[in-house]
Image (cartoon, rainbow, N blue to C red; front, side, top):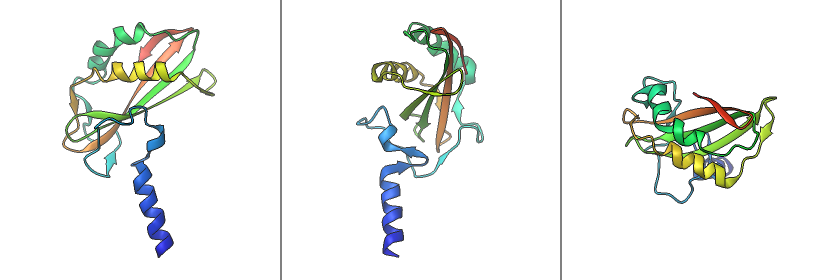
Length: 146
């Protein structure tokens, strides 16, 4: 029983939902989920109020201005929308065209997070939920944001 309790305690202390706190780019901010239950983004209307159109309208220009030196592949930006419609707990994963993991610099990750934080019309429906934005690149140029 003591071992099981220790495992559960450690798990809650180091993870929120499926997020390992060591992977969070925006560590040290005041952002916190409202509960330990974080729903997936495709559940009942969580997300951006004007959906993908609104996301592209806000972040397309600043994303296109970033430097992705000859990179072709996808960058996945995953984060949490809390019950107060705030966003945080950002994680970024990149893969090349062959779906092999690619490391991108901390500086570029922070710039991407700063751009995504420009989005301020979230609908968390008084719950916490995950959300993700994909950036598709070819030869260092943004092809699509979805």
